[in-house]
Image (cartoon, rainbow, N blue to C red; front, side, top):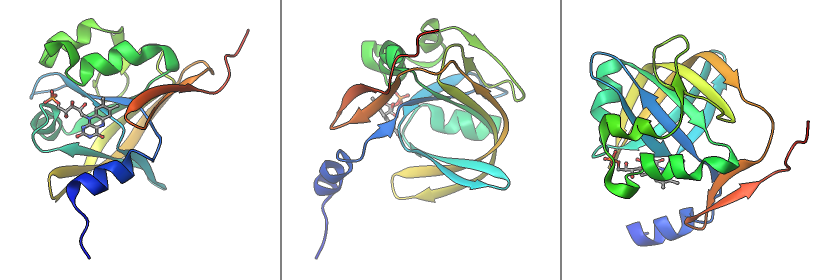
Length: 166
Ligand SMILES: Cc1cc2nc3c(=O)[nH]c(=O)nc-3n(C[C@H](O)[C@H](O)[C@H](O)COP(=O)(O)O)c2cc1C
């Protein structure tokens, strides 16, 4: 029994996931891509992984720089997700006109008002099929204010959680 690519994609649409902007900066330049294929690997050393298509503009830049920052979006940041996934035709540096950006330990762009940001050095890259799997060791974390998160589910955006009133 074999599973087609279409069947796999349809099935994966049933898995809700956080929406992240994965960024990088360094000798290879600045780049950022929207990615939902992000997950925890181990807390010792604190490590997450990101799966990125080999054809994505960010892929060679991440490898050249050796650092990434995973910025997990809050519910109101859908326009930033769209910009960094190529909606509107924005590429490269022009994507950073959406959102306000700073840096932490590695110099990779950190998104102001993200739900949480993980600043990482790339420890290992594994090539699998169409994608590269980046194992990223976390050097610094910045937690945003609590509030509603942005989830990608059923090929669409959904806010989850409760608004926190100060
Ligand atoms: C919500 C959402 C999640 C995405 N997740 C991933 C992902 O995990 N990995 C990936 O390679 N592309 C993902 N993409 C597609 C990329 O954002 C992007 O469109 C694609 O890599 C082409 O990038 P480029 O225009 O920078 O070359 C996602 C797009 C959206 C809208």
